[in-house]
Length: 260
Image 1 (cartoon, rainbow, N blue to C red):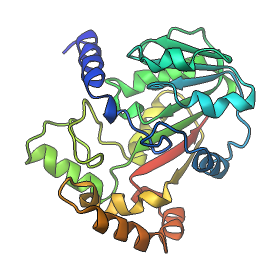
Image 2 (tube, rainbow, N blue to C red):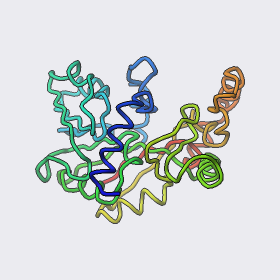
Image 3 (tube, rainbow, N blue to C red):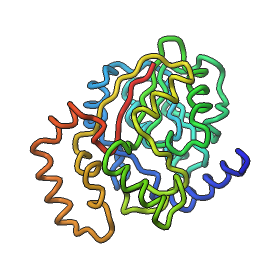
Image 4 (cartoon, one colour):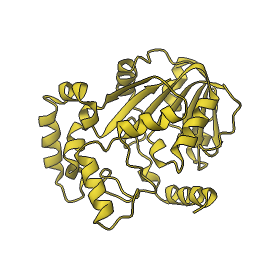
């Protein structure tokens, strides 16, 4: 399949499956989990955000609300031109429809690149990382959020794509086990390898504590799992998840990165 055909396939899929454009920092109602985002950025040492900010794979641009109070210019880029762009445009925000493998920006344009739960879908991750490095200014940093399959969720994903009804990189054990359009088997080693190949040198990683239960028990998001069981397991895990994920971030269903 050519790159253009691959891109077109992703565009069509996510136009018809907008509900799958999810993030650990966006609520079901379309709000931003500001407190959680603040907490994890602090844990990564990203207390001050340097602008301009590029939100790569921005979806409907909801994260623009988070950066607005910081008085930094924000640019959101996505493969689709979302209806939400019009609502979020203005107040220093810009939106561009484009391809992460060929960013339509000059070299060293951005102080911060944010990529929340879209990098795992890119057809050529190394090329995308090289483009991120090109548009990142000297001393700039990348905030990356990606699914993590170095856990039981990865075992289930590999089984479903090998022995189940899904082709490789077309399924993920979250969001009620729905089909995805390209979902790389992401692990911490995979992320480091991709960004090292693109010329990045410094990495800092944390996990999301309240997703420990999903990393170890991905069946909690199966459509047949009663909600009361999921809620009960989450409450039980909340007694120790922060301690475990602080020591073993790779057990969480997502990992968060500061890369420079």
